[in-house]
Amino acid sequence: MNPRSFLSLAKALVDDATNSRIASPLHAAACRSAISRAYYATFQVACEFFTSIKLEVGRNAASHITIQHALNNSGDASLIAVGMKLGTLHRDRLKADYEPNWAESDKSRHAAKLILLADEAIAKLDELTSGVASRAFDGTPIASQILNWASLTQKNIRSTK
Image 1 (cartoon, one colour):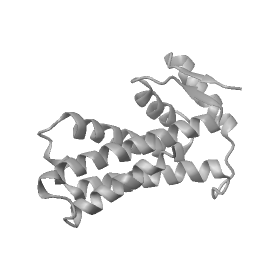
Image 2: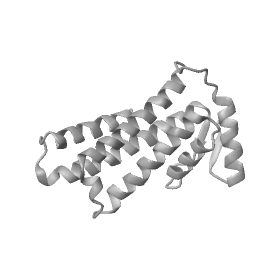
Image 3: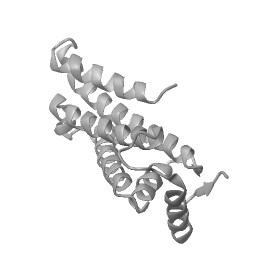
């Protein structure tokens, strides 16, 4: 399955909630679900990115944080920005899923803002891996930088070369 489909679902949920095509009692659930799906789409595309640069991150609960931190320690400004967006999405996804009294996640405006963040992060990762980036992208030094960071911090990332 293409993980970008989760982002499409998030957009549809927020659109339906915003335009009252979803029953009022389900509005909050739609917004919270959209936040969760926007995060998950971005996380899965980040996993694809790691595969494209020949890195494997262990698949467990810790991998959600490990991927954010690896991007933040990649030495590449674009990837650091993606890591920061992924961190924001993850934080708000946890609030939407586990904090029923956090009212911000019930608002379609907030969900739409997070969907935009997810869109930007996914677009940047796709741009880099597609070879159409405005600058040449070589994943080898990025992978080396991330592996060095993972070694120093004992994170579960390994080369697949």
